[in-house]
Length: 122
Image 1 (cartoon, rainbow, N blue to C red):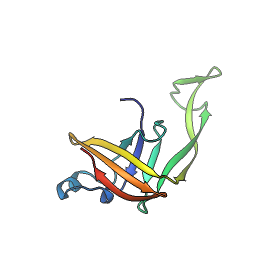
Image 2 (cartoon, helix red, strand yellow):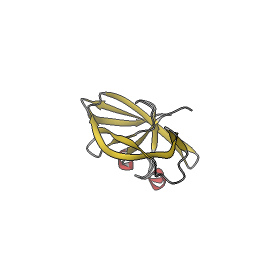
Image 3 (tube, rainbow, N blue to C red):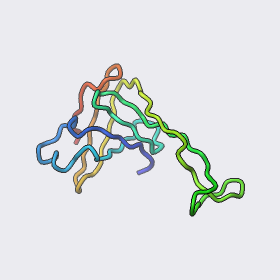
Image 4 (cartoon, rainbow, N blue to C red):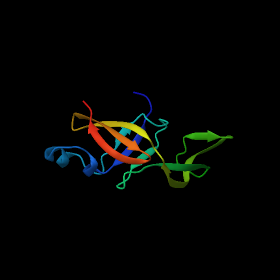
C-alpha cells in the first residue's frame, strides 16, 4: 500500500446512514495520499478548513530502550514542538479506510480554502 497521511474529520460532516453513524465516530482515523505521504496528520476542521500537524523532532540519548544509533549513541527521536498549520487548499481530497470490514471512501471538495462538499465514492 505504501505510505500515506492520516486524516481527521468529524463524523457529522460525512454522508453516512444512521446505522453507519453508530460505527463511525470522531475518533475514526482516515487515510489519504493527496498530500506528502509522510505519515503526518491532516485535519478538516469543524469550520471546513484544512490544516496539518507540523512536528519538530529532536534526538535524545536518554530514551530507554533506544533502538537507533546516532554518532555511536543509542537513543531515539522525541517530539520537540508541534503546531497546527493552516493550508489554503483548493481542489479535492480523497480519503478512506476500512471500518468493521466495510470499505469507506470519500471525496471532499474545497474552494478557496473552505470545504464545500463531501461525497461518498464507491
